[in-house]
Image 1 (cartoon, rainbow, N blue to C red):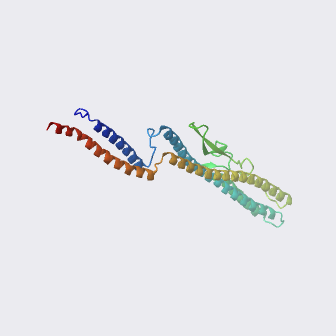
Image 2 (cartoon, rainbow, N blue to C red):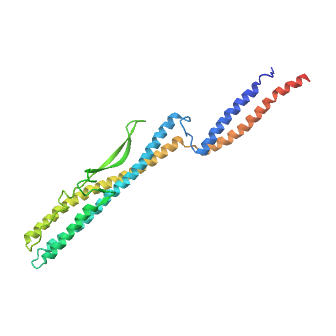
Image 3 (spheres, helix red, strand yellow):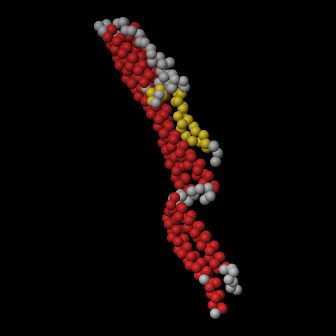
Length: 282
């Protein structure tokens, strides 16, 4: 039965065209943004996971920077350790020469004092951005430096926390390396041996500090590699969940454009149906 009040064919064709236009709009958005999941309305579950992972990835980027600063701080302290060991070698050589009765002890003592002042300066100035790991405190108050090292999420969807690497101050001043005075040489083997003993005690403290700082530097370096790998893995995971398959989207776009043209023609034909009723009255 034909009706001039209701055009069922046109309604079906119109609904089909609306559906195609809606799919076409989504596909065009997907191509323009490169995202298959761009908001919660696209897929709430996937969007929520991807958003949290993206937050973690950003935190890993920040942590990578913090680790870089932390490693630089430790490496500056290690450079100071190298200077101290070299200077101690020089002082020890002078102390050994002080065993000779014909040595100029006044000059030797002046040289030793100058080198000791150099050591004090090294301990005081081996700092990075105000952080000195060779003193008794790293910043005047704290006995250790905490460096952000990783992001931890205890449960899926749970809150994230930040782990740290703790680097303790080596306290070379407390270990008898900084701001101390050597026994003056006076031409006797006893005083020379005393000075050599003082140097050896200092060297033990310096080498212990160097070993501790070297281990921390290696740990931070390894953590930097891990954090970099984690950041890349997170970005890859987010990409898999949210990025559009551009080859598929391109093929879908062309198919929808054809469907849109056909649906438009179908609607046009359906809209002409009431006109055919007029022929019944001619």
